[in-house]
Length: 235
Image (cartoon, rainbow, N blue to C red; front, side, top):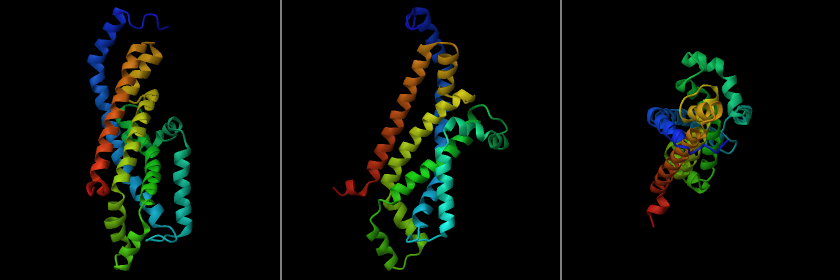
C-alpha cells in the first residue's frame, strides 16, 4: 500500500493538488474555525458565567431548577459525539443555512458542539478567582452585573484565553471530521483523497497542515494569555 508513496508520479500529482486545492482548503478551515469559535464564545461564555454567578451562594442566585436544567442541557450536548450531533442537527442546519453540505453548513453543528464545552471551560476559569476579591467588591456596594463585568471576567482573562485556545484546537479538529459529511477544508481533502482514492501522500500533507494550524493557534493563545496575566507583568 505504501510501496509507491514517494514515487515521482505520486509526488508530482500531490504537488499539483497542493498548489491548486490546498490554499482554498486552508482558508476554509481557518475561516470555519474562527467563525465557529466566535459564535461559540458568544453563547458559551455567558452560560459559563451563569453556572458560577447563578449558584446559591453566587453573586446572582438563580432558581435551583433553572441551574439544574442548564447543567443537564450542557452535559447532554457535550456527551453526543460530534459526527452524530452533526447528523442530528441537519434540519436546523438546513433551516439556517439552506443546505447541509459545504463549508458554511459546518458552522452550525460546530457551534452547537462547542458552546457547551466553552461554557464548562469558562466555568472552570471563573472558579479560579480568589473569593476575597468578590467579597471586597460586594462590600463596596457593587451590583451583581458590575461584579461580573468588572471583577470576575477581567480577573479570569488569562485563564479564559488559555481555555479559549483549547476550544479553538478542538473546533479545528471537529472541522476536519466534518469532511466526512461534505464539509469543506483540509478534512474534506484528507478524506476524499486519502480514504476514497488511496492517495495517502495528499492525506499526509493535509494532516501536517492541520498540525501546523494547531501549533499556530496554540502559540498565539499562549502569547495572549501571557501578555494579559497581571501577575507576570508585575514581576
